[in-house]
Amino acid sequence: MDADPRAIASQLQSLLPDDLSPDLVFAISPPTLAEILAQVSAFYAVPTPLIIKHYRHCRHRDISFARHVVCYLARTMTRLSHQQIGTRLGGFDIATVYYGHIRLTQLRAHNEIVRDDLDILHRRVMDVVLTRCATCH
Image 1: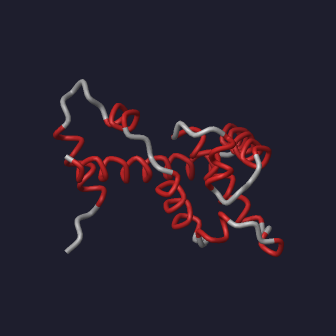
Image 2: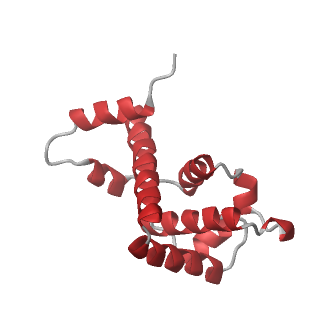
């Protein structure tokens, strides 16, 4: 039986000293782009290949929105530059990544649903990181 990632993250959090928060663990071991991509793909039910590839016929709003969410989370949760994110997402240019990051920053400020989605995704990615760190030690 597979352990629930949230339960593992909760157990890890309870084992951490009071002065070592999950945020510190997160800062020491940031998420990978693959972890962010997997969470966004599952959350929005958009297959990963559609998010990371240039398909002319796949510029559907849901796909581009999911791609922008990946860009936003990758930029805010990792140490990757716009260029590194674009390259790792299948060769998107800096402008695409920058636009996705800026667009989601603006939407987050004005749209409660987007803000809630980003908060949920942030927590899910953080749970993945905490689970990964728990299995490494």
